[in-house]
Length: 632
Image 1 (cartoon, rainbow, N blue to C red):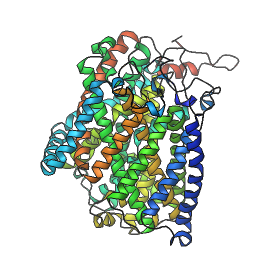
Image 2: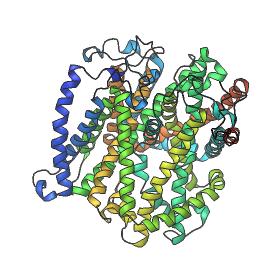
Image 3: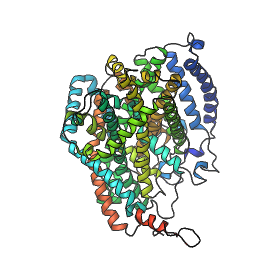
Image 4: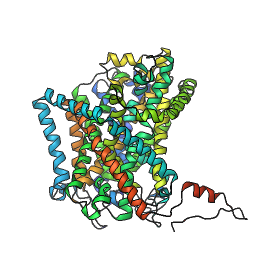
């Protein structure tokens, strides 16, 4: 990235005249729209005759969007830096954005872009949709065939790589290399741990956890994995279904981010490599060799995977949000409504990304986590707690006992469509999520990065699926709700699953309101991060991305999502994006080999977790622990 003179963190830019005007306009819009939306949810007879049809979508977007945008644009006191970080310096320098006046966004824009990492992905997306328009059937058939070949023929690659990633994370957690401090012994973390965890978790999980939380367990319940030999919709299928949801969203999934993110962080902060996905090749190419075609190919794939993956996610959760609005107010939406939702999201996450890590990304991540906890607590309070706890305990026990067989079970259509697909999906997101994890991890020990990136995040995911999936299973199994029937009635659309489940619970309107808010906030926290990361990758090396870059990639991401909704090809594009998980799974194996070799050469003499625990038990006569830090 650029020097201090070349970059300018958005945290210090909150006092511009344009921003003050925007904030002044956003606040009354948020309040007014909020009154209408809340009245529509809890007192529908008051405004039901006034607002109808697409009006509910517009008002909902205005409420959620203006509130998040206002939060992102609030100024940050430059003298206090980051109050949450205890007065430490501002955003990590590698994530800063160089701001230019809006009149100059286009001036010199192309000259600041890397011709390869910028040009190739743009051409690929343009070609994809052009071919899709000209020959939709042939395009779908070709992508489907390629996906089937990847998920069937290369299933062992994904299974073995993911399992090794988990084993490697476990070793780092307890072994001597966990004591390595990224950035050197004097480096200090920029953020407090809660903020660090919030940004890592919300950026990496996106709205997928909201979308699949109530749905995946139900699908496994209705169609259990053939290997377990239980009857569909039976008592035995309940714990099996929930255990597989935990498996697909637990430690295996999050380890995919770590095995790319940790090498990037280590070589960036210990060996001066650039903040690029291609930095994982540093042990083989050298830091000075990361400008070659091999490194640029990795970064191009990272840009394509990120834009394709996030854009299709925006389209998917758009359908879920519209399904929720339609369920609540009994209105339908066509293509215009879907495009309106995507356009609103582009504005929200564009403002958040442009405002920087210190303001929009950090704050909205915090709001996301608070909503996540609030919704989970409310659902636990009003849901079938006994069933959730009993089934959850059984599912957790099965997940732990069957982890190795589940991880290495090869073959079969079910495994290809679920486990292998999921692993490829997580690896396709690993470039941007791993790079963001790396950028935030300066001053952290490797053990802390592993604990946060794998243990803490997967624990949050598992709790969510236990609660939301367990509640959906309880209502489905008891016959109180037929969520699977609702999916069948809506042409197999998984987006509708959650809403009949909430409708059967006390405080259903409040649950629905918070759930819709979570859909918006979760996708914003991933889309703003992906926009920033892609802007970094596509900008010419040695320069910070500009405001124009943020706007370009944010809009392109939205255009791809809109094209998926209008032109079609969402499944094809998603399959193509997920297919990039294959190369990144191979790259993960390579990165682990390179990182291990470097650790063995340069990182000797660090204490294991057992060493630290043993010394901590040896107290002085005064009762104070003996200090132990072999790194200093």
